[in-house]
Length: 216
Image 1 (cartoon, one colour):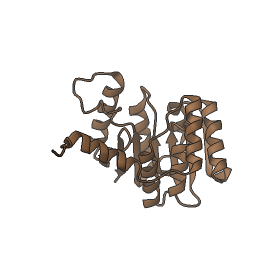
Image 2: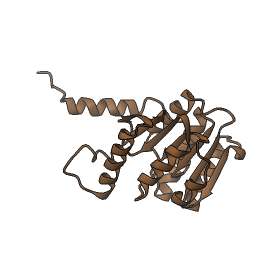
Image 3: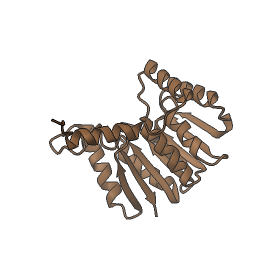
Image 4: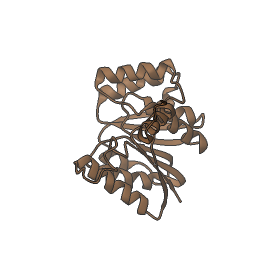
């Protein structure tokens, strides 16, 4: 008798297939190994590919990122962005930024196309120019995530795009009984973004959730 596949199993198989749709090259693979050594978890393969597509779709030039990690997401953004795009990426850990520099160098990204800032995003973001950026990517599990989102919207020009990684909090967000602080924080962020009349939004299931919003 033929075995039946449950909808949940089929859905997970489809998710795994979609995550691996775009095979990564040796540069991103090496960056992920550096992440393992530093205890850093970069964005998933699916999220990395999605960031490249989003940056390419809008011909992004000015990019801001909170949470540099080892450079996987930053390189993915630059690979899709315009040839003269500049990435401003913020991370409090100098070792992470050094690993990201290695990633960018191995990919042949000119140093003039990256501005890597060691610091706290809540202190750096307010100093950046309002309306001066095409795309803002947030990859930070921080109590100030809601503030990062508000600052991100401020930084975007009309038509600019905000992307928040791990927006489903490792699949905990859809479960009402889960009351962990990180989950409650992301629920609040989802509500605020969804209800913001300045934004057009969607939630993507790639990785551990990617909340995407375009500024009107």
